[in-house]
Length: 244
Image (cartoon, rainbow, N blue to C red; front, side, top):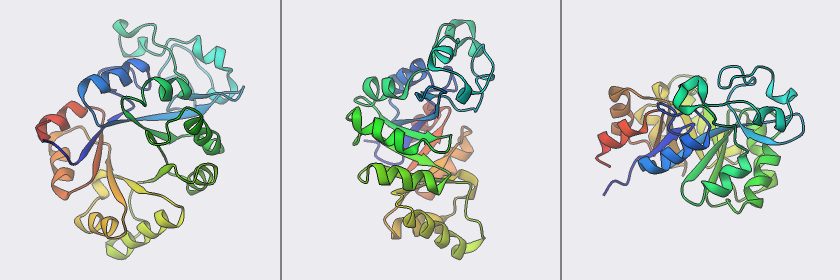
């Protein structure tokens, strides 16, 4: 039976389906991923939606800043046709919808893409009963502190491109930073992960997640390093390598 590492579907099964849509999330469940990652931003009228970019230009048939658009304006856009005609009609989901519909069946890793919304996101996680089925991650230490302040029991992770300084001292500094902001795990760019970073995280009780890789050689490398989880746009490849 496959146990480790856990396999995360990046923005859902985004190699095949339009990212951050219910179709991509449902496909991740069908595939057998262990959890999925999504991105959140806030609309002009205060609603938290699943979108990666600051604008809707790349992943919908519209244009404009997410933060300047109302929920109704965002929801009127087609969030699937850019990926192919067969995906036309997909809509931008609310975080609340995903937590209510997806989290009971698959753990959801929520990346905060807009500063100042982490506390509200944490509250939505609590309100939807997803405290044990969701995590929050961010590159920003303030986001993680805000999420922990709103819901201390909520699992949070620090995203990083890697240690600022080379060598084990830089890796220990990264671990210390994560611990100081209350993080439960580190999500690190895969090329920055070393055997000593894996060891330092585990020594201090932190899980280490690797992002984002799709090529078999990159997937094999992080698996051999002993990371706890890996993030991929093509999680089916990771599952095949792991025999799951």
